[in-house]
Image (cartoon, rainbow, N blue to C red; front, side, top):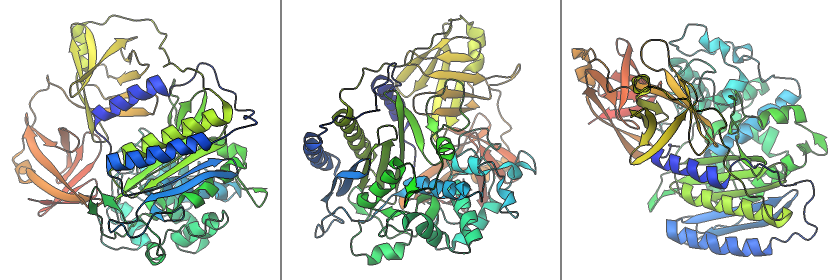
Length: 567
């Protein structure tokens, strides 16, 4: 589930600023049109899906439009595999990948509603033997709560040492969870948003352990079955025996059947017909058999950006992403990996939602385009024309800073496999990614903004290099950790680092991936996401600027708990 290039990311940010930013005047969702009609929308979407499938070479697609308690359209397109002998229909099972996180968070909130757990319980209260290595003190792991786990604020790595997107060796869920003990925190607990598959899995492990059943059985018995999602499953053997499932592809390459070791984070197989029931459950005030299973108080937590910064309007809630949409909130989550791409999006105030599933792992552009067109069309059909929206202006005084000071902020900064360069020229600060340059407007020594409404908030000590900056935008509050500066002194250039230098090959979701370790200005660097500085914490234990662990054992390099072989 890899991040896109920063260049594409900036283009998307710009798009959402102009197209989908917070409205200055809200549309009324209190009363829908009496004569709402989705016929025209369905016809145009049917045509669009076929056209885009051909354009992006997507083999199979299934889609559903949900209006409150009604599925207004559900349809399959294309084929389950490249033999083109079986067509996708509305009950064909697809891997939903990270959309599973939304379902796991829901299962937890249902238990919290019963009083069995609290969001702010530290997890060692329910899992006393839990531990993870830390550079920030022996007691750091004891601070982690369920809120941290479900909002990606725990500081845990993206992957576990055993059972991850790079590790296709079969293991038990117990072995998968226990391996966290040999991992390391990337950041102090609560400090940065750091997407991690460990959070939902640890949460579900605790729930299932207390129930005395497997995690797959727990989620099926306590969430899927009560919602009537009888064909949906976390059991891959059930999927393969169903006779109606889509095989995963990257372009024309069929992905081998792959054991998914992290069911709560990415193991749900479902179809739009049944996922529509999950949306209708939410639109029905979270009732099952006329009984509220998640109270408005807890629901508000799920739909609230966690650890929100001043001025932040979008980010991650509990198992869902949140962003402004014409004065209300768009709730969504994507999933991608092992040859699949999926999107589930809805507007709680409007009680409308869209589900798009594909069996093409490179289909993110397709799913984004289809779900956005569908949701916009549904909103217009149900409520009428939308107000014109404009990017939020930053109404703060402008200050002028010396070039000498601005050069202190200059350098490269790293976040989630993306590097951004901050450049100081002629008393101006700019953010550079490839050929794209964005000018920053100074409001104080550390507070900057862009014409598009993004905020750049720097953390700079009185002496020395910057620590990081936060980019508060219309999608998230992204943390960029200071990486290096053109004015840095040369590093130690330890002879012992020479054994690390070289090329290493691994596999992510069955796709080959190569990283390089090399020397630059006396420092060790890694190529992952751009030239990223590597620091030796202890003999043989290294960390990248953005917190990924690096350990070398023989010809094997373990990078962020992922195995790579030296070439």
